[in-house]
Length: 289
Ligand code: DGL
Image (cartoon, rainbow, N blue to C red):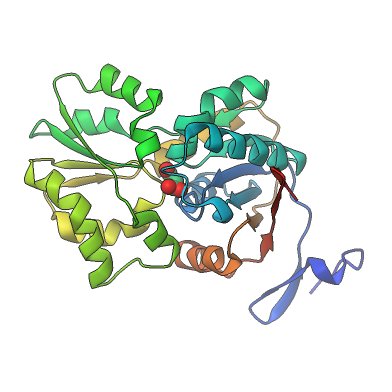
């Protein structure tokens, strides 16, 4: 084992029974979400870009974003972006439909020259796939009332019936680790049932938290219903954006949260299969420290 003695003990993290040394990230891809949801995007980014360093920020202290006013989400997103750029991020992935709806356009204007990748519910592929002519979109109120969503529906869903459904309590349930079991299924069914009853044969997951529940969603919806998770398409877009930037990184991750570190570690373990070191940040007078 090689130990770089220039590193302080605080830089040591335990992986299995062998302590290893963390190196500073090199021009990482910065990703953020209100909580653990953006990890569903990070997982695909990691798969497509194994060499890149990734810096993930979960704003657990303000989760959920879904019903907050857009101005508030914009202020949070601006500060998070500033913070991630301050830690060397080469680009920012807004791994959250709600923050994309509320802030993406303003972030691009405010941080000129910074590459951003954002999200919008996958209405376009859903409209192409449906056989019944009805698709269902699960998302937060802020996402569904935003202009980005109205635009994709107008541009890509002509002649298709688009049913929308908000899911109160679902993000909180996922943050608390409720990914399986009767309670999870009952909550899901409340939101999925009305879409299926009205003939939706494609379900768009318009919130990055929901793919945590894909096994349960598929079970409830049955094999004839397609469930669309946009993560791979977002990761492909990140790869395209990075084509213009110099190669960097060695496949490391860093995880930051303003909320409960255990919630983020548990989600990383579940989705990515390893035990992460999680750094705690706090909000003070609108600034992250
Ligand atoms: N994961 C987020 C999204 O994609 C945010 C959900 C929330 O915080 O309400 O919309």
